Amino acid sequence: MGTSGPLAGVRVLSIAINLPGPAAVARLAGQGASVVTVLPPSGDPMEQFARAYYDELHAGQEVRRVDLKSGAGRAEVDALLAEVDVFVTSSRPSALRRLDLDFASVHERHPQVCQVDIVGYPGEQAETAGHDLTYQAGTGLLGEGRMPTTLVVDLAGSERAAAEASAALVARARLGEGVRREVALSDLAETMSRPFAHGLTVPGQLLGGGLPVYGIYAAAEGQIALAALEPHFTQALLAALRLTPEDLTRERLGAVFAERTAADWQVWAHEHDIPLTALR
Image (cartoon, rainbow, N blue to C red):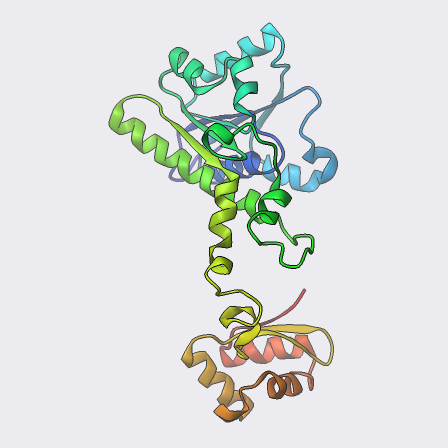
């Protein structure tokens, strides 16, 4: 339970499973909120997929297993709602309505509660099925079809949900009652795709390989990522490598970086204050 931090004293109840909701609630707990997470009797799928990650996301929380389809289970959650400030969900609106856990129902019984509903698509499209992979696919984030390295939309959604929870608390202080905030993961995919949509990261463009000082290079062993984007970093790179501006081509830099291992280059970059890191 949180005992310090900007959200100390704030009480959070979550019925969200998988990744966006738990990651959002972990963020709130990290800021000092006290958290009770209610899971179905079968638990959270993350327990089977990645137990260590599940444990990380639920550290310091009270975790209960409750059958929300039973009268006793709904009564237990309703008793919790009477004492909390923020309620986080990640179910479809129809499922929440069946459980009397949609905002209208919760607000009628517990007007102090700020509700954050994480959904796939906004508004009337909220019943549409989707996951991180499909949100990324629909906005060009998967490039030529490679599986994503991380669940960027889910994690961005979790940060947005945590921010919306704090915003809802501010609104409650002003209005005197809880408010609802909706976080649509498809919207986050659109937000994450804006650099690509505006051409910054399109292959061959400025941050898509077109700038020699911003890219990935093969080393004698391993690979390095170079991001000497600002002029002072570019000048530092040239000076440290004893190169001229005319040498700033991918071919010339590639030949230089092939002379040493990625680990060696990372040590060298730290010594010369150049943004360069070995790929893990």
